[in-house]
Image (cartoon, rainbow, N blue to C red; front, side, top):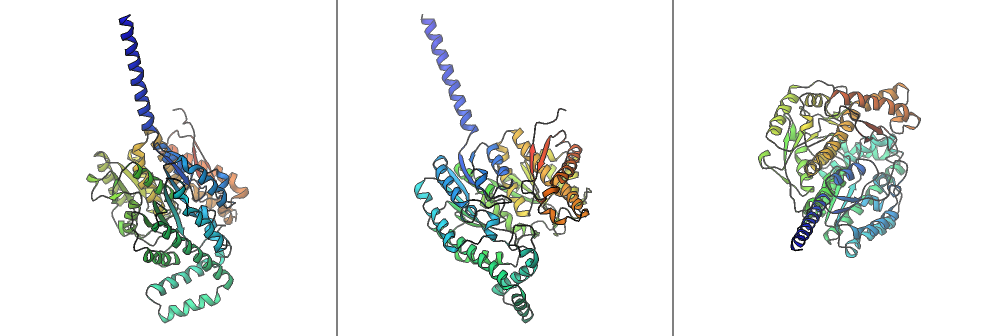
Length: 529
């Protein structure tokens, strides 16, 4: 009887130990619950972001797709607000796009006709959120962009015709505010203002004023502790532009706010992941140290397309935005942020004819330096910003041939340099926290999207549409989506079989916004080897 009781005690003790270890593993696997309200439903703003955070162990709650902005509709601010209020009690932190809550999405912020009173009413709802729920609130907004030109339905219709003239006018307005104008430039500005359609120019300027007013109000709310942290992103702009001028005015207004609570950040589409990563870092009291390691040449002095800041100015800002710290060397860093930059500092689109599969001496030197870092065991996240909107073919071809691609912690090379850098910082921080298989899956998606599609298949698809005299279909594929899908998928599959890292990958690509500019990569079960 005594022996039986001892055995029973041992069994109970074993069960308790198993329960303890199982609970500990579950707690380790699932971290905090984060609420996420994205800019819109583009993969880089929503699904890619959610999959990155979830792979790192976080639970992410996101609104139903029908409430978010898509390529053919604006989001619903009222439904998104209801969703936010109903889900807030379930989360430790919330990351929200104020553009979605106030305008209905990023595109809507540039094209809406909402009265100021309606915008302010939607803004006021945010005032009460932190009083109602004990949730860390991270908000991000955008300063309206100033593109040199724009096509498709992402700007007011007149911009496709008079956008370049508006951009020139914008440059002169900023220059006048900053340093004054010469007589020649003053006459040019007056001529542009006279000849531009008055109703169109007025429409553009009034919407900008509404946007600036809302952003100013958001900074006031930050000052009143309504947000744990607020980031305002500078959408596509230039060193002289209305976006640059408005950022300067906001900086002057917010001299009393510290960067612990407020930042103006270069770029926009990466802000959701930046703030989710920051929320996770702060909840876990983790301040990652990031060392920026540039390729030879212009490196940190490079001024990317679509930006008003050099990389040397903007990269530290994005590191700070994730509550990170800039390290002085690889030896005292948690993450090495490797930046492949153009040797001469001139950045072009990845579809440029110069983007060929031939490596330069600079490429080979930099790859050798990266190999040394990897051999020493450093975590290296690569931001491929030699070109805009896609990878550097020569560099990536050589990197893969030397079998260094699969040794990276993370890889990014999409859209603007600021977007790429933001994702590279975040995924570099998060991927070491993931199971190896999940981290590899996310990196394969970026390689297929940023290298195979953006720098190669997109160029082939554009040439195909131009050969059919259908250049406008780049922005709305319509009946051309099926042949473009077959062509682009074929190019991506051919490239995937060339390189060890993606060989036997089974994937499909989708065009969620019915245009060439972005795809959604769907990885399926790999082909049998």
